[in-house]
Length: 238
Image (tube, rainbow, N blue to C red; front, side):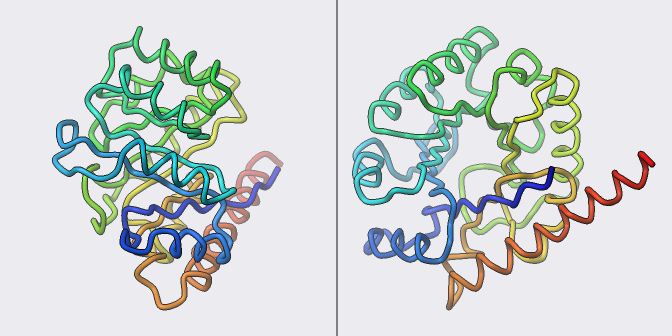
């Protein structure tokens, strides 16, 4: 069944001096989620925002908070962000071992949030196998994490398609696939056709003169690509 894309603008590209206004802006522009990039200066070289900001964001918007933890110690930090009201918590597969990954997924679910695992562009997708049946979402990075404004890495759409197949093999048809990095009107079709459900957009939204128009352009291009892909699949099955 066709499901419209979800758009999750990344506040990493927002104006932090008027963040409240920018949140209101994307709410009015039709965003589905708010993507919150948390960087610790260890797992990635950059440092961004932390727990107090998530607490304040929770109070400032009714949109789900899509918290992406680019941190070296997610086992320590995930509980803090759950307490602050994160609705979706994503941690990186590269920062944990298999048992820690399983434990974190359970912990997130017990808190009533959605559990997601992110993978860097060069990470073997096999790392997802132990938990993919239990995940709510996989975040496929289409740039190296750590900085906004990077260009889309070619071949990321192929990795998205691989995750789609992995989820089908274990019967997790409800798995969402999020893609983050260099996504805009010119690249959204590739990832949407491959099976992406959630699009993270930074500069493609916040750097535009009219974020509402930008979101609509990305959504319409992606939805058209998804619909086309479904028609193609249906034709192959006939």
